[in-house]
Image (cartoon, rainbow, N blue to C red; front, side, top):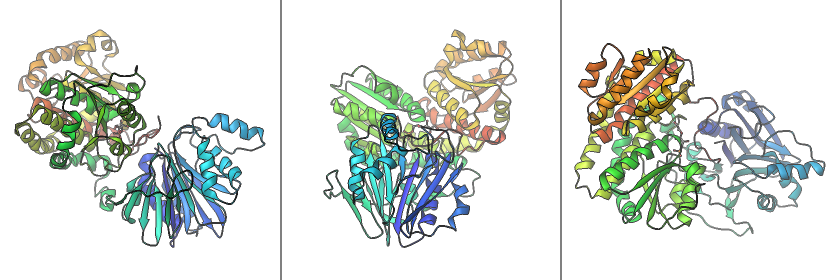
Amino acid sequence: MCGIIGYAGGGNAAAAIYKGLLNLEYRGYDSAGLAVMENGKCRVVKSCGRVEKLNASLQFLSGNTGIGHTRWATHGKPSNSNAHPHTYGKVTIVHNGIIENYAELKSKLLAEGDVFSSDTDSEVLAHLIDKFYDGNLLSAVVKCADMLKGSYALLCMREGKDEIVAAKYRSPVILGYGEGCNYCSSDLPALAGNCGRVCVLEDGDFAEVTASYIRICDRTGKEISREILPNLAEPAELSAGGFPHYMLKELWEAPATVKNTVKLFESCKTSALAALSGAERIILTGCGTAYHAALAGKRYIEEFCGIPCEAEYAGELRYKTTPECGKTALIAVTQSGETADTVEAARLFKSLGAKVTAVTNSPHSAITRLSDAVVRVAAGTEVCVAATKSYSGQIAALYLIAALLKGDDGEMTKKVEKAPDLILNALQQVDIYTLAEMCSNSRGVYFLGRDIDYAVALEGSLKLKEVSYLPGSGYPAGELKHGTLALIDEKTLSVFIITDEKLAAKSSGAVEQVLARRGKVAVLTNIDGVRGAFENRAEIITLPECDKFLSPLVSAAALQLLAYRTAVIMGRDPDKPRNLAKSVTVE
Ligand code: F6R
């Protein structure tokens, strides 16, 4: 969240930064800005709203070195003055992260007579670096960093020199090596097509970036070397490819994601087995959608391997009483690999002696660097803020991990190999338009299921909320009568997911309870008896038949489509929902 980019080269810095910002916009889009060094002077343009609003100013900027930012507000409302870059004296900065002790630093600076022009935590960085500067920008940045509590990916320029200094702590910075130019960025998509090689900074690293060199060093200024990797980001992945929105494009990419995740799993097996076998307890963690995938993963491991499992939100897990870690293994599920709560939970468990396995879509992320084993989700770039195909990949990966721990002889893997066709059937056959209309006309939408269908209900609800802004929740169907039923009337819609024969009668009872109270009902099912029972009394969505444990793949496909259609009917932008950002690097 918040995207930062720096460019130093022979070309037009403003154009290069603008292009990078467009590709980083999924990290935040309430305001944007950029600064270029023109004849030794720093020129800044900013705008509230989307990155494209900067376009009109680009023609007036001509420098070769610059920095840019797209913002997801943490401190201070979205506004021109709170937009980055922030300048103080001769120093201009962009920042991703949170400076936890900014209030204390700011009051000292105010007492010294400094005047602040924003409500952000980040502005203190420009003030401190300007004050500490004594001829060397890097050492001023180090002195500033020494005073900070919190997290930062920081890019800084000072008037008079075509140079960017970067600093990284608990927020990502990737350096890109181009032809006659160099880059710094929060993430790979901004570097797609620009540079063949990249380098991921570690916590505590600093770097000097100019058109002709990148120098990485520690806080003493001593040069250090970091592995230089090929740039895996594909420019082609950055187009919606004829689809009206990335969300629609990406949810159609779920079958390919599952197929490629199965393929990649072969190369992950040995390390996953080493990290997980022998564990007497497995904890799965993640945030949002990734947590919902973790819930399904918990069921797989318990059911197939009999190992006691827990699934916990990463933001909660971190603050529980210090966990007993002997013989405990952690599985951290995260698309971006940078979600602060997930990364910190993994770091905590590792420090307590637990083996950590990451299930992630991001090969160069913070989570991959600290984990003992990495199981790759092969979703490719997911641009839409709402997770779609990555969820499907996570489900497939967790199912495969459970199969591996069980010692599967290939039967379970074969089942996952068939899943892409089932997802495709669901996407092609499900007629979701009527239900999307029903959602858009409802005052609240509740998603209900039992067991694995409950895990999917949570995800269906989250997806609808985030892209349509309709209120609602996911519940275990059996819990309805214990309180939530009070919300039901003719203006609410209850969406039941019923894919488990064994629990179908119980869930059907809950459907009857809602109908008896004149609530509107939809039933997503692949069970004939359920369909027959509610044919003329509820909206029926028929799902393809599939193994109960892989049903999240087909029901989620239908629910993602439902969320997308509802958002479009309601005139929302499904790719960039209000208030949100992808890759939540603040705690
Ligand atoms: C919802 C969504 C979020 C993310 C969550 C974790 O559609 O995208 O709930 O799932 O922020 O992100 P990652 O998986 O990157 O750790």
